[in-house]
Length: 119
Image (cartoon, rainbow, N blue to C red):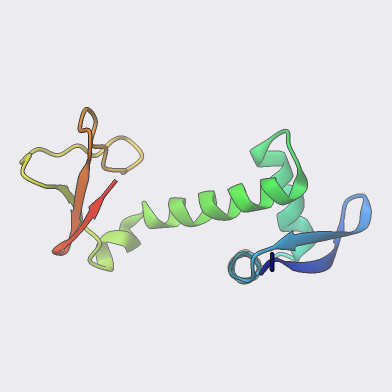
């Protein structure tokens, strides 16, 4: 079975090692480096510290998702027109983190500017 994982050498606090990530995750990791004005090794160290126990590659994957989820929860999400609302409930179910929760629904439906997503 072919894989689309890309193997790259990186330097971490323990020296040179390799990591295998999807091309999209490498792109996202480099975008974080540009935004934070930090080298890859520092972002990898930060990921391991913030995510906790587990492997380095897993920590980087989780960190990338958390980084962009946090950005999506900010006002930029609303400015981009990604206003989340529940379908047919008429009540605001946004939690403290700004995430819309559809608790109790077997198949939750989230509408965003006319697009429907079943979760």
